Image (cartoon, rainbow, N blue to C red; front, side, top):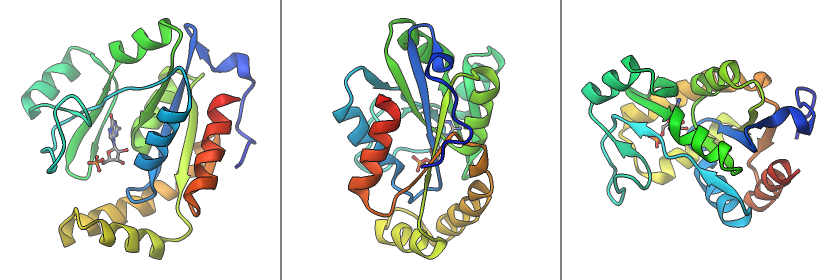
Length: 196
Ligand code: 5GP
């Protein structure tokens, strides 16, 4: 864990809750870390993102994402409804401002799992947000994990790997870097960051 960019506890508050942003390359294990954190940490809620990508088998609208059309996404951008949004792996992804603010005002801590471009937009708008980058031991390990998932075509996998290299270049902008080598220790590290 790295702390040189970390700020004091009082600076992390918006309303009564704190906002935590989890990013990192696909295949780094953000999803698993997120699920564990949500299960283990009381008062931590997840903000469900909107996306234009199609649901994967087993995904349900309103659970993993709100699956919306490109047209709706563009309208919501024009209406200023997004706290952040980005074009990731050929689709649009975004976080609704109202969802996050409602939870923070209610005193809940909110977790976003979003890409690096989105995380940097959040930092601009809410400087108090705590940014956590989930890193991988190596690019080779990342490729192995992505192949093992069998969720992507070869082309999509190549896009994800190329994006991973770009994302890794920006991890210095994060408050904390958690290397997901061993899942249990990575979960514990994330739990400590959020609970501190
Ligand atoms: P996937 O399609 O595999 O679920 O997600 C692809 C990427 O989109 C992941 O890196 C994920 O963190 C990112 N992502 C998911 N939701 C959002 C969001 O609301 N905003 C941004 N900027 N990225 C997101």
